[in-house]
Image (cartoon, rainbow, N blue to C red; front, side, top):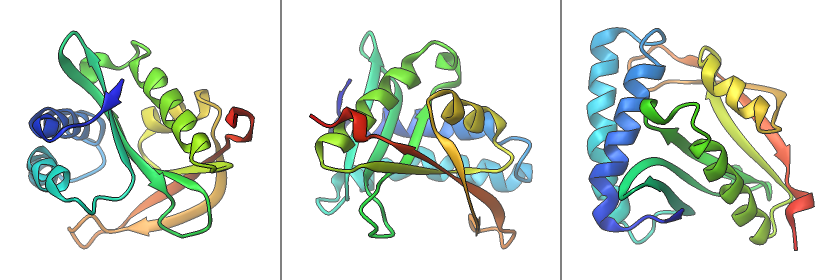
Length: 169
């Protein structure tokens, strides 16, 4: 586990794109999904080059290959919670424990930054993601939102929350 560097942009983009391609194939129309996959493949070069990118971006490697990443920081709502903006692993790494290890580091980092609680939003139809967060100690808060990814057809997202007070030093 380490902080991402600019030269990781292509690898992070590949992880993000492949995770979207596989995980969301039944949630979006195929042509729209293909376009979104390509956006995610290319967006990290600009994001990592932006000195104003909020939060922290960690990568998990197997050998010298990035297999998962998480982007997180203070919640966008400004309510003092930490927020996971993105957390994805290569589909070939699903079920290996790498995402759990990465998420543990995310939680420790947010706790060290004095956050007491964290949130993550996930698509209501993303059953693998929802199961993962529940397995990692998150619970549904009951909050929902509609999010338009650009096709004019908003999808339902669910908020997952977890206390990280116990991780504070």
